[in-house]
Length: 356
Image 1 (cartoon, rainbow, N blue to C red):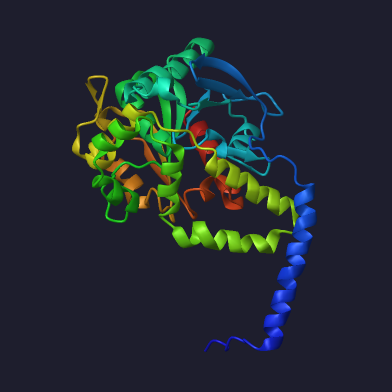
Image 2 (cartoon, rainbow, N blue to C red):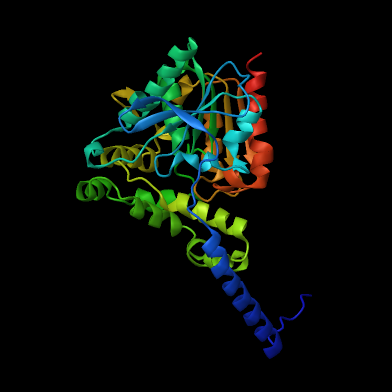
């Protein structure tokens, strides 16, 4: 039996006094907080195509891995969630284990990018980065880590160019877009995407952010800001909070034509499962994904439910398929303490087993 909640005048007064103390201390803390940025690890530009840039991360020691690992993130957010800060960095964990890590930065599309298509993102940009690494390392294929929408792009690229990908890792990647627990997909399937894109051109980042926030309105509009009071007197915790907020709202617009194609072929057509994904006139068949695949999904993911990701097992052509479940959510898989302990090591060990 649970104990009764004490709503006495004395307890309420104590709580109010504690909140006032936190707010007063918060004023001093906010004066100490400088500009908040993200991206903890040194990196250098090694290749560029327009606004799209390939960076190489530089760790404290030289990499041991002979095959480079290229990370492809989603278009909707900046890719440095995987390197948010020193103690919350999947990239740092991979570097410490000897991996040679690169990341593709899609940049910020503007009106000149309105007619970019999925072929541009998958074959031109992602493919251009892969080809650059193949030339630099004088090898036929590289390792590819695709995250969220970047995982869907990586699956398409690997199916269309199987000889160029040695090992493929997908993380919180949607494959079956029509699972019953996928709220975002249920919303999107009823969208008149032609009218939407024809009216807006590029899709504003604010529209996309609003959609994601309203999937969990209480948690993301109210609860986390009420909870902010509890950390106002903790400079480090406040900086962590502000860093995450900056990342969430520093989102690029979406190139209109590519967005139209992605919604139609993936969210509405469920193309990985039903067929019908067309990239530059070539059909995507996941049966051609015959390289080793590690599929990592988050058990409490509200954007990519586990069932949406686990569907990959029945679609790829490889005989070397592995799954890793992570006890956390879509963002926790990058920044939680558990993620730092588990995810980089699992990726490194899996790759090491296939490099012998």
